[in-house]
Amino acid sequence: MNNKKGFSILEVLVAISILVIIVFTFTTLFSAGFSGIFSAGRKSEALYKVQKEMENAIINKSGNNVTDGTISISFPSLTDPITVTGKFVICDQTYTDSNGNERTVTITSFVPNQ
Image (cartoon, helix red, strand yellow):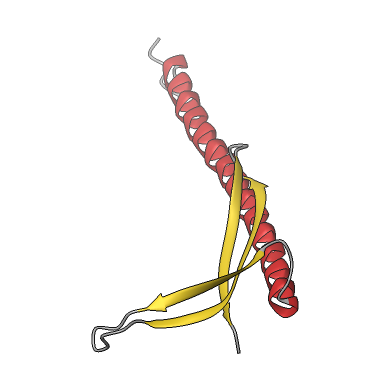
């Protein structure tokens, strides 16, 4: 038993345990990163679709997502607020996030009358 040329079984088991913990940690981070990247991609795609829909609605100034409205803007130096009439354009798109939940991207814009 005086031969000290190798590792004991306990040292090998401790080294393997540490290696397993490190590999498990990096695997978890890697999969979470992938799901986050895919979720961000789906959100970007939904934003792109909403933006195209918004641009078409603004150009045409018609559709079921276009309503007439007014905006009042108040300034401290003015006694009466400024009222602007125009059209509200509201567009939304749903997507699925990394947890499988349905999310909605909504963009609201106001186009003043000329």
